[in-house]
Image 1 (tube, rainbow, N blue to C red):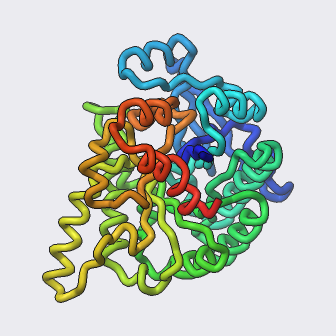
Image 2: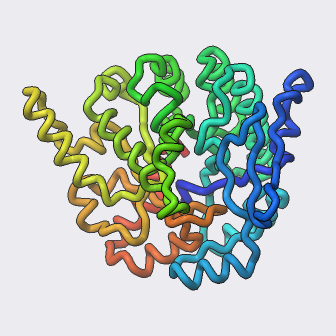
Length: 358
């Protein structure tokens, strides 16, 4: 069985921007460290603090967080920042992972509202991941970031990324002032369909006003309102929209929001279909080609009653330190799930292969 981690990460460093074109180097992000915050750095982009970056944790910090949460978050810095690709592959071997699909960290929030900066930064990031893929012996595939402020440039980036190991097109649930069902994005969906690439809707929020609104001093590390709820709402909007009919080959992955919300969304959308006199699909996740990453603490037998066995995948959130992270999630799933061997094979291998076209 080919075991696939459907949600792993790279942590950007200043080396990520070494791939900028000479004329774009004026847009290079810079890491800044405020005084009094020894473990915290921020990205300065276009004169503003933008993007997303986790605090820097020591090995002792990671050990403590692992002990406190009961979930392993420990990863070597050189592996999560991709300074040492071979070390990353060796760690994957120890975790029983054959392939990781790599997602970004910095683009979880919006980096800029200027198209020229968006194009420059997305292009450099995609080139960095293409270089990592070339070193990865076929085991490190990736979700490319399209510069959506310029659709022609985004389409060109998608084509180039596809030729260099990318297996998905990243979308945020909210992109500036637009949501995923906006026809503005239809050219992206058409090109992704043509290239047999899914849309990977990773938890994120590309609207800086909404991010500021939902940040809470009572739960400073929470991603629930900022990133998870918009992701669930995006799935609801997709099911209610014309998009599954307009793009009948396009696959969708909703990444890192857990899967426990699936029964809720099925109930909500079915009622709305009935009210509109529409026929609800027999299995909306299967029929609309929607895949969802689960967590080991999801009630999977209950979730599978609504999603079916063919549309659930799992990720480790490798490289991050939040409530989604469980570096040994695949081992834990095998030991704790109470699922049949055939269901486990679908979640760990068959389904992610179908989602990412591997």
